[in-house]
Amino acid sequence: MATWDLIMTGPCADPLSCPLETITCRAAIAWAEKSRLSIEEVQVEPPKPGEVRIRMLSSGICGSDDHVLKGELSVKFPLIPGHEGAGIVESVGDGVCSVKQGDKVLTLIIPQCRECDACLHSQGNFCDKQDVLPCSGVMLDGTCRFSCRGQKIYHSFRTSTFTEYTVVPEIAVVKIDDDAPMDKVCLISCGVPTGYGAAVNSAKVTPGSTCVVFGLGGVGSAVVMGCKASGASRIIGVDINEQKFPRARALGVTDCLNPNKLKKPVQEVVMEMTGVGADFAFEAIGKVETMVAAWNSCNNSYGVCLIVGLAPVDAQLCLEAAKILSGKTLKGVCLGDYKTRDCIPQIVTDYLQDKINIDPLVTHQLPFNQLHKALELYHAGKTIRCVLLF
Image (cartoon, rainbow, N blue to C red; front, side, top):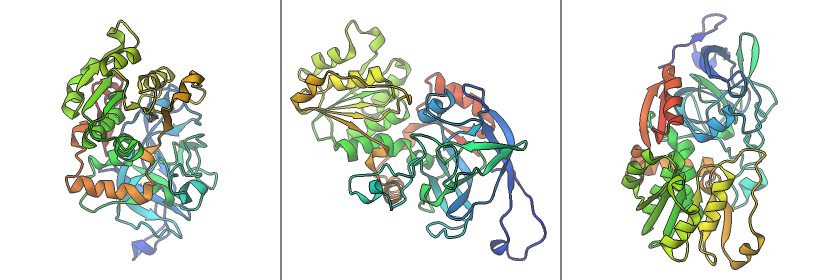
């Protein structure tokens, strides 16, 4: 549990009616692009109207966080990274009605304002109030809630979960079941809906189909789980790290390919293995070359290629235009096309009811003060998901 200090101005008989105060706690700060994260003492301001302050209990380390730290996305430094979080509401700002103090909640990298075109459209989920593409680093009112040594610290995706306390907009947090195990359920705020949802909700993988998954990390592994749950008869996993293959097979992968050890481009090998190409191809890495390979692995007539990985902000995707005419589909996917506040609580409930098992995805759990060890495990490819515990 976090150690923290409330900076109080005086005694208060009723804590719920007291003016909210600044909290001092530990957080991981990236002071600059590609710099080593530094665990610092930070000040976390009270939530303003429409905001929620959360005591974090766990946070997964996701590939998108790595993109942020490497400077591959448009972000502002210094910042507190992290977005895949679970915690308990510590306090709420004026006007907040969907969560209250003491609620178990998940942070949402893609909010749901329920007012914009994307939220109101039946097929949309990429809310106009998201702060990923691009990332402004500030709250909806244009200001920050974090400071360290008198300096403003920016938010990451308006979530910033590598901290004992964070502040998020109400539209970027959702209440979950009181029985949810907070040391694992953080994965359902991003990795599970992104991967599992891409297969079962976005692609709607069909029984007996052939799927190919590029990237067997946390999101790719969740894609595999979704393909298996949907009844795919063949799941081909592609990754340059063969340490991931045993776990991938345990999750449902039938064939494993290391592109670095193939004599032909991986898409040609997939075509030869399947005879006609995959029914569904998923790219869960975020690299242009693997996106093209996934596209070229699909059946030319009815194949569906789903881009799940987040590419660097300046990356350009180039495809052979003539091959699009044959009928196959290229689709971008964000969080499994789920409307986050509406749908993610149900995924938590499904997990509690054993309809989906996310436990195999959590291969490591480490205390927050071992953040650097967790990052080393991530970069070495030795983990599917490492969860930080506060």
